[in-house]
Image (cartoon, rainbow, N blue to C red):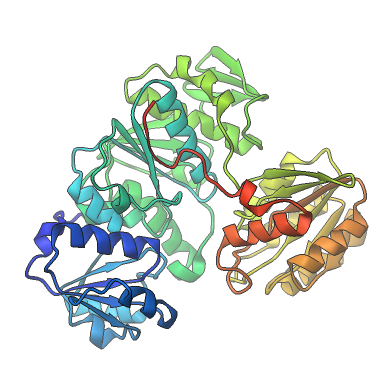
Length: 466
């Protein structure tokens, strides 16, 4: 449902709270304070974040740690951080009492209604695709901002001026576009398959929330993957729809990139590991084309793209073993895509992590047909994955091992694969053992004997002039 935009100055005179004190929450606080320095605010945060909030020395900021439905219902507007589920019972109860929940993303869009925005989402590949989009636009001489879920909250860029905004959106943020009341110029959906079920509550709601960028956000131009069955069924009467992955548009034939019947260039040397990433180059070029720019001349600049960390990132080789960090992998589907990249190598894949109840049946079925040399299970859902795979290990010809944690999993893998690849592609989140996938990837690098600081930076985030 589309809403009337709420700009920051329209919060004046309302009872306003912030819920969440991560980077998004802090960005919302500073954006509000810059425009409304005298507005009373309440912050709901974790107990270990209280001292950080008090350090602001803001007499008009109240800090609380119990976000009950009764307390939330007191406020007219609550700016909620993306990581807090919109479906928490206390949030639903407060909303039923008239509290309006918005996000930093919605506030930014309301403040920047004329910005030329290209929003990118998808279960897999959205960060790389958004960064690649910004890279090619900059190569064309356009002042381009790269922001959003990729690691830079939009409200931290509130006063920046750009020709184009390349914005990554997670499934936690895709409904925020409709809530902003502002239509994106272009929106891209790469693919949709089950993810983040603990936040959304069900696979159906995850899909609905993900596709809300299109169905409720109503971008002026929608770009969709023709090879995704869920996307192929979408009806978007309010948007001009363009497809990638079809023979009449941008598509791949093996490693060759085509626009319709015209060969453009060979993508085999492009630093985008995996066919799925190179396919998403087609989405980027479709977006550039619909913006009225010369996509064919910009396409070869993909060869100078710098890959993002924690996404099929080759760290290096130690004692004959190549270590690959794919910590961003949080679904079994992502793990399968990672394995496909190394199908011609001897691989030990490390899988498992936080258990969100996602079905690993398709992964098990794929292992019956083409399994890696070694599978090492670990983490909270490691035993469940191990039990699922055990009946097929002998017949399918793969070695199945179990480990308690990442350190022991690497040790097991080192003994099992003397000359090959150790691939961290967990297919599960890192919660519990690590703060996030970045911390997990850094620990993997450290355990493998590499400098974590050297592999962590995301290139190009923020506003970069060409």
